[in-house]
Image 1 (cartoon, helix red, strand yellow):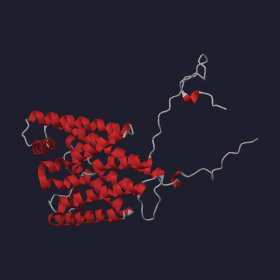
Image 2 (cartoon, rainbow, N blue to C red):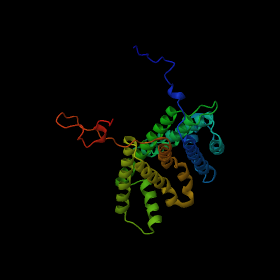
Image 3 (cartoon, one colour):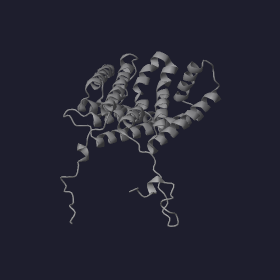
Image 4 (tube, rainbow, N blue to C red):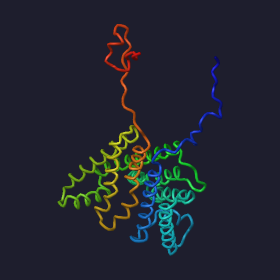
Length: 311
């Protein structure tokens, strides 16, 4: 009897596969993460009057006068604030694409406009989760036109979140180890944060040692995110990312909250991956296979799967 080979029309298109269970929760988590970092970036300019890195990169190229630099920075801050509100309600593809370009240019600005030291490159690389979270949301919540969040798009989104979180944690870890030896802005902020948390003054050696240990832990968590699917490691990454994001607030109080909001994509990325794994992935129990030996009777095998079925 001849076997029939399936035609090309019978093969299921992976982009038309059923939507994974719980994908709306995954989309909602990404919406909140992107919106919060937009609010943090807007507050950094509108409330704290910090300079906009994108405008600092654009001003020499466009030859903007000094009085227009502040106006353009305020205009962009209001635009980012509006992007956060729209994303929280109903993400729009061209807004997310524009936001990705703005965040990417803001990360590159300090490297291109100033001296590209190792500390500067690592500090900017530790913020890679910002544009990565926006692109991940774009993949699973594309509109208009409305595209169903298929399994392929969800897996691509989680892979992008993993990559962004891993690179950010590795960059922050190396920066922490580097500044624990040579000093720098991160060491100063970390020292102030420890002072506020412990309510006692630590020596410079203790602060440097603590920062170096935290850097090593961050690198280890980054490697575990990329190499495995452990939910425990994801939970640890969420906690570690949350502590890293809270360092400016612990150190500088009210003047550091905007940076904390902007950096919430660091703990938010592993949190979104964890939500996807809990709702959409079912892990199978381990199955042990018996050794095939002629001298051992199948009926006496301790493995139930190797015994002959009863008639």
